[in-house]
Amino acid sequence: MTLNSGAPRPPFALRLREVDFHPKVLLQRKLLILRGDCRFKCCCSDKVVLVRSVVTGAGRKGGDKIEEWPSDLSKKVRKVRVQAAPAWSFASSQPQLASRQEKFFPRCTPRNSGPQSHDTPPKRDTGIANEKDMSINLLTEDVNESGINEDGSTWYRESGEDLGENGYRCRWTKMGGQSSDGSSKWKEAWWEKSDWTGYKELGVEKSGRNSEGDSWWETWREVLHQDEWSNIARIERSAQKQAKSGTENAGWYENWWEKYDAKGWTEKGANKYGRLNEQSWWEKWGEHYDGRGSVLKWTDKWAETEVGTKWGDKWEEKFFGGVGSRQGETWHVTPAGERWSRTWGEEHFGNGKVHKYGKSTTGENWDIVVNEETYYEAEPHYGWADVVGDSTQLLSIQPQDKPPGGYPYPDFGSFPPPPQGGDMPPRNQ
Image (cartoon, rainbow, N blue to C red; front, top):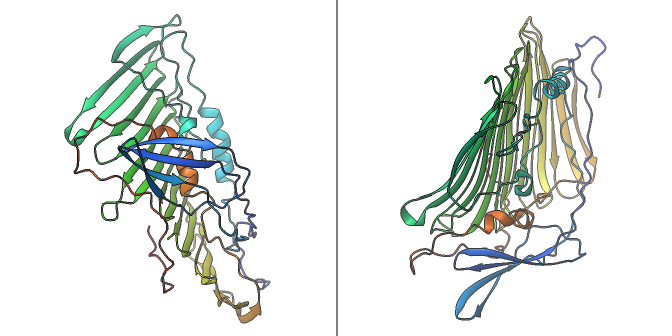
């Protein structure tokens, strides 16, 4: 279906994207939970698996209770092709900001002595880094030192340990420095936290400013805890990043999060904002997998200029057991307030039949039923077994010795049977 010849056209390109799904080759892992502490035993495996399921067992060794979590997972791999709303970009604003970012966000000046800065200004649309990429290396003793380099720049480094109630312990390291004239500065902090409930946290915070007035800030966290009601183990990862130009009206901010539990429940999402002089843009998206076959995905993007032009695109899909729906809208508003939009939808019945419908403000209208195969992503491409395998430093955090009783072990249990109904999880924004 095409727009009528006399219809106004939105100032952005429309295109469909096809995403191929390639499951990872996963290392078999056996997670041992001993007295609330986690260790790994790994052996190579060339078995291709789609990671989601978790199988558990229990045993005795040396009088200590050990719960085992092997990730020898096997399940059917479903072909996935995402057939969502048209892809969409913001004319020239995002590429311009990305290229300018490389210009006004240089690396920190290397130090001749003292701590070397690991602080590199964050880059846009890079998601949440794995812990090995954060280079967290906590000092093993209390330190409080500072110095002056040959070029006149200064540095400091501190480390320590804080203790609290219920076995709370926080080990931390802080460092930073500045140029001789104070025009550029950088700071970085690392920490690990734990307590007797099984809570463990690994974190990083970085910030900096250069001589041109450009500034940036970034934080990263990884947390292991147990659900308050079910005692199921959960790992959550998050990252916030922002940067601002010192010479023009340009900057951006991003907030990313991922949540996983041992039953296969997964939630991912991001909120983004950017500005380059007279143009601003926003983007939000989310994914929710209940671990039993239900999936919800959505995306909402929009932009505007100072003269009043606005445009956007959004879509949503819900599926369970091969049955579900997709719907979306593309829209545009002129400075004079004239609005153009096209809405569309699909109903997938699970029997090879798809009902497609839609309309636009320029008179387009369609309502048909076609024979078409249904494709959707029923499981996350990166799930519980992946995040456990990538969180070895988090899981190796050693809490204080705890008293007997009163603090249950987290449950890395097996998956529950599939639900009887097809209720979808609520949309979480």
